Image (cartoon, rainbow, N blue to C red; front, side):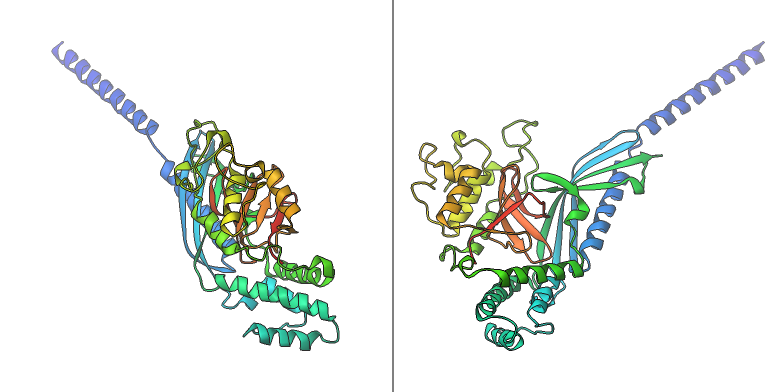
Length: 389
């Protein structure tokens, strides 16, 4: 009897041990966290896509990936990322850029090596004196001078490229299914596949250069007027836009559902204080500030003062465009030609400053949302304006 009781006691103890072990295993399994594995997979995928896409034209100095959020279910994953990529153009000279090669090819300067504007103009005349009219030679010369002067600032200089990405993917057996990874990129006011923000091929960019030079040659005399506003400093406007913008990832005193990402404490509040009457949609206000920093003078129609004194043309996107066009300060441009210091309008009446065009990538800075040096791609409904010829 004693032996039976002892056997029962041992059996009960073993049973209890088994239950405890099973429970512990269950708890351990329930607490298994694969978040870091998911993040590693997503980060590596993003880095591969950007490196493969930009690597032909840039040396990739670094890529930093920040996860703003990550949502995981049993079979799906979604992540929002802010990515900064530091790059340096591989082109050692402006004439090495595919777009410029196309421009030069159109005016019979296929193997041209730039030394000075004077030598370029001499070579241009010699190569085209029997095929182009005098006014066409003048227009081609002015265009090439602008391009070489503008693009030289990007040669041998490291620069940042910023992206806001949304990643979705399937999850199976606690692993991301590689083929299911989908990367969408914020493109000013819409989302596009990341492929839209990757550089085009050399052949495509060269074709764009040929096309744009042909457009220059086709311009009528009256269309090719002197500078729209001779005192406008587009680089000063660009620098202002970059100085007073930031890549905000949260709302500013509007609650979590506002849909507007701002960092109002980083604005130029001393010169342009925020007024509640002006609301939080300040994209036009910000562009007006940058244009004024570039030298465009205020007047009674375009003015920033107190809330009561500030004019509609300063803070309203439509009124700003009408004012600038009516004054003759702006002229229409296009995706390939619009350079830093120009302005971009979207179909949603949003306006931003163009802050970079090295012929391979384009960037903007703006407010509502607050964005700084973010890459963008062309959309057929976008409008581009510049303040120079």
